Structures are given as structure tokens and as C-alpha cells.
Length: 315
Image (cartoon, rainbow, N blue to C red; front, side):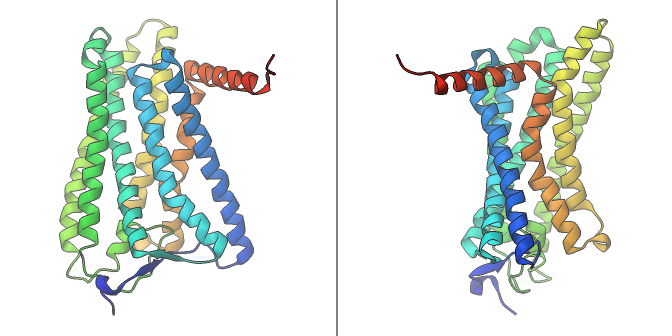
């Protein structure tokens, strides 16, 4: 038996004990991480450099890409390092930092997706008021509110979880420090304090989910009233990527956290954690660029201009 004051490090769950498979997993995660860095980096650079994309929708998309970069950079590099060096250890301070940063980025991303649904609602259902309701100051305030809410959520949960007495050892049954797995290490009588905070957070997240659903009900009702096929196609091209990102984010996260404990197993938990923490940041840039012709054109223009600049010889 140990308590939190005597723990100096945690042991993370390894994907495999076979050395060859560990190296294979390292290369797989390296590829996913590079894809996320490249995709989100391209979106950030393109939106920042192209003044035609300086609109509320792309401003929020830039923030989403920043959050995706942060979330995948919190978990994947440490997992890759552990696989490469054949170790499972993470320091106590490193685990605290990982819990805080991951919660911060993921919570802020969820709140930002809620804000983005409001942006799409105003653009389609109240287009004449779009410039008034979503001016520069309003957009900055909403984005700051999403980042601030994520920071507050992460701070409360992290401070609370690591103030609990940890009496069940230091082996975390996940490839990164995840709150449900750390709660399993706490004393049976001490996790109730965190439980109330989780209930409050769940209510807040459920409220945001209801807001997104109601917004899209109104959006699809308005789109179906658009008389021209071209108008409907344009509306769908801006809404469906956001809806796909929300669906991927919410479905994987909800299934990971709300599945029955009777069906839980280390292998299933590991797969679900990859699905909600690693896959979305890598896929989001692809989802947004597939149906958004303006964004694709701007990305290709940026890449071609960069290539020409790199290959052109000075006089």
C-alpha cells in the first residue's frame, strides 16, 4: 500500500512487451503525429497568411488546429519515447502535467466546437445579422471563453485528482495519464470528491452537446428551405465538416468514458483511448479540407508559392 506522497513516478500501460512490435508501434505513432503536425500546421499557416480566410469560421478553425496540435503533442511523444527506450515510467510531475494539459486542450476543443456550431447557425439561419453577431471582438471573446473554460476545467480536475490519497500502487492502465485510470488508484473512500466534480463537468458537457444538436436542427431546417441546389451544396460544404468533427470527437470520447464497467478491459480501453485522443487531431485537417474548396485552393496556393520560392534561383 502506498499513498500519493510516496509516489515519485507512475508506470504506464505498454501496447506490447515484444521489442519488434514496440518499434513498429513507435513508427505508427510517429507517422500519425507527423500527419497531425503537417495537416494542422498547414491549416494554421494558410489561414494566417491568406487574408481571404480572415473570417469568423476560419478564425475558429485556426484555434481548433492549435488545440489539436496541443492535445496530440501531450500524449503521443511520451508514448513514442517509452516504446523507443522500452520503458513504462513517467514522473509524478510529468503525469500531473499530462493530465492538466490533455484536459485543457480537450475541454477547450469541445467548448470551441460548441462556439463553431453557433457560428454556422448564425451564418445560415441569420445571415443578415452575421457581421453584427460575429464581429471581430465577439469572435475573440468567444474563442477566449472556450480556452478559459478549458483551462478552468483542467485546473479544477487536476488539483482535485492529485489531492486524493492514492493507495492502489502506481500502475496506470493506460498509455497516458488518464483521470479514470488514476481514480482506480485512489482509496475507495476518497474518490467521491472527484465524482461530484465529474458529475458537474458531465452536466456542462451535456449542455454544450444539447446546444450543438439544437443548432444543427435549426441549420438543417433552414438548408432544406433553400430553393437552389447550389445554395444547399454551399451550406452543406461549410456545415458537414464541422458536424463530422463533432461526431468523431463526441462518439469516441463518450464511448470511452460511458461504456459499462463490465465490458471494460485493458485492451479495449487502450484502443478507445487511441480513437478519442490520437485519431481526431490527425483526421480533423483532412475532414475540413475535403469539402472546403476555398481552403483547399488556399492550401495548394501556399504550397505552390513556397515551392516556387524554394526552387527559384536568385539573379
